[in-house]
Image (cartoon, rainbow, N blue to C red; front, side, top):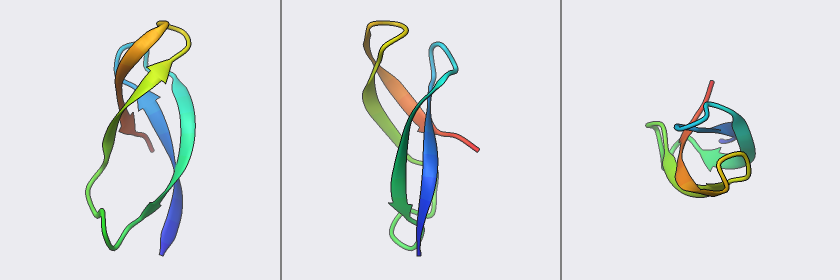
Length: 49
């Protein structure tokens, strides 16, 4: 049931992280606040395609 997803920065639109997600527990797209090395600050990251 776990699936690998990419996290995309909402500010610079770059793929920065990959993580695993359980589709049964989180059927919607997730959003986490992570560090973006291109912006050099913490920004919201959404689940990409």
